Length: 323
Image 1 (cartoon, rainbow, N blue to C red):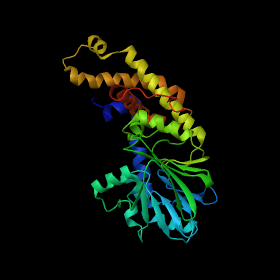
Image 2: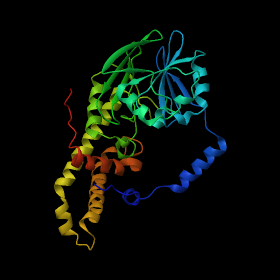
Image 3: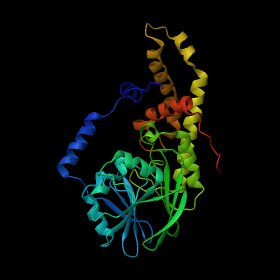
Image 4: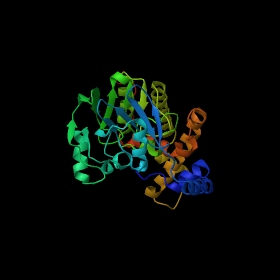
């Protein structure tokens, strides 16, 4: 089904402050990239981030266990790790195969042992990308591995954000890393995180809530997450799904065609139909979230379209199926 265009999204939300964004980018270029944020989460667990991306570092007995290596960090990663410990990186865990989270891996020397799910390893062999070295060790389904004296539980699940979902839990530290599923305190990135399976994303929320943890490293935004953040995100998905169902019930495509005569073909007019449904969803959903999450006016229209599309292509997400 055709998507809502960039022009449409600007119309829905009233425009984008391009001048302000350009000024901010220019100021950033003059000042240069800021050092990464480094914050201790538990006895052995550390948060590293640049405001847009974040990841988990674990301090082991004789080395560091790095979970993801976003390329946006560049050479700042080495300085951040030295703030944590002088120990070398001996293990690297991939959350998934996407470039924006792991393409800093190829620059790590000496090369650590790289661990990932079997599905991620298959994808990376296909990509043949030197920036994303192929894992040297794979895990399947549910496995507890001991890394530098720490038990780390790696759980793999069905497609959600990408081809599979990897949950990295450190039970002794109360930590969970699960990436591109939750955006703590924020409206999700456009098209609900560009996820390939939104029913799977809902299932992933409920899988996370069934696990024992205190602090979530979610891969994006400027802070860690809590169990409440996962609950709030799940509430948002439910609200979007229910609003999409209401808009489809209130205005079918044949009704739209009959009510809006046009010389355009029905194929072209489907774009306009979707635009109308997105406008109605934004008007419905926005008042409930504008004061609860950041970035609502930036990402809500795209996320409404993603949920509308999901209902047609994959079917409505099922809520409460695993709890």
